[in-house]
Every structure is written in C-alpha cells, then in structure tokens.
Length: 71
Ligand code: HEC
Ligand code: HEC
Image: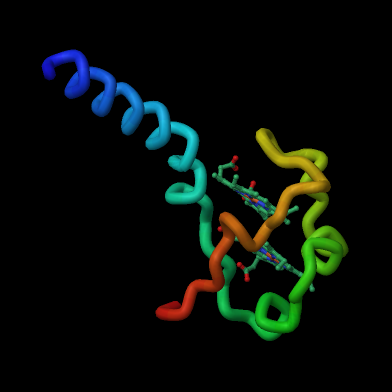
C-alpha cells in the first residue's frame, strides 16, 4: 500500500515537470496580429524561435502560448 502511494507521488511529480513549461509560457497579447495568426508558420514570420532557449521550429506554438483574453 505504501509503495503505491510513493509511486503515485513520484508519477505526479514527473508529469508536473513535463507539463510545467506550459504554465510558465507567456500568453500572446490580444493584438490584431496575434488574433489573426492561426498557424505555427504565421508565428515564425515574426518570432525567430531559433534564438529562444527550449524552442524549436516544429513546435506547436498554440499548445503553450494561449491568447490572453483578459488583457
Ligand atoms: C505580425 C507579427 C507577429 C505575429 C504573426 C505573431 N507575433 Fe507574437 N508578438 C509580436 C510582437 C510585436 C510582440 C511584442 C508586443 C506584444 O506583446 O504585443 C509579440 C509578443 C508575443 C509574446 C509575448 C512575449 C513576452 O515576452 O511576453 C508571445 C508569447 C508571442 N508573441 C507568441 C506568438 C505566437 C505563438 C504567435 C503565433 C500564433 C505569434 N506570436 C504571432 C508580433 C507577432
Ligand atoms: C512546450 C511549451 C512551448 C512551446 C511549444 C512554445 N513555447 Fe514559446 N515559450 C515557452 C516558455 C515556457 C517561454 C518563457 C521562457 C523562455 O523564454 O524560454 C516561452 C517564450 C516565448 C516567447 C518570448 C521570448 C522572449 O524572449 O521574450 C515567444 C515570442 C515565444 N515563446 C514564441 C513561441 C513560438 C512562435 C512558438 C512556436 C514555434 C513557441 N513559442 C512554442 C513555452 C513554449
């Protein structure tokens, strides 16, 4: 029983780390450009992610950078 608890905690910590970047990803400001951009290719037209740490041109930008609705 104890072993199951330890495993459950370990798994949630590991999953938490994997998903954490999404939480910290800055949201897109609701500018006209950001509302119009619907594809990763559109994002790359303005943002050269090659210079950012932990970024790749094949990334799905939308999975992390949500549009900020309350701004
Ligand atoms: C027409 C050019 C343009 C396009 C297309 C564009 N952006 Fe931006 N983006 C900007 C500019 C300029 C800023 C800085 C001013 C602002 O925040 O509005 C910015 C800011 C951001 C920020 C905030 C950065 C910070 O430091 O807080 C994020 C995140 C971002 N963009 C992601 C994206 C993603 C993801 C896409 C594709 C859906 C995208 N952008 C498409 C021009 C663009
Ligand atoms: C796995 C989640 C994730 C994905 C996918 C992702 N980003 Fe980010 N992005 C982040 C995080 C976290 C930060 C803030 C920390 C950092 O700069 O590394 C960030 C920062 C940024 C910034 C601000 C950089 C700065 O120096 O101010 C921009 C612009 C941005 N991302 C654009 C994009 C674009 C365009 C794509 C798609 C090609 C993309 N991101 C894909 C997580 C992600």
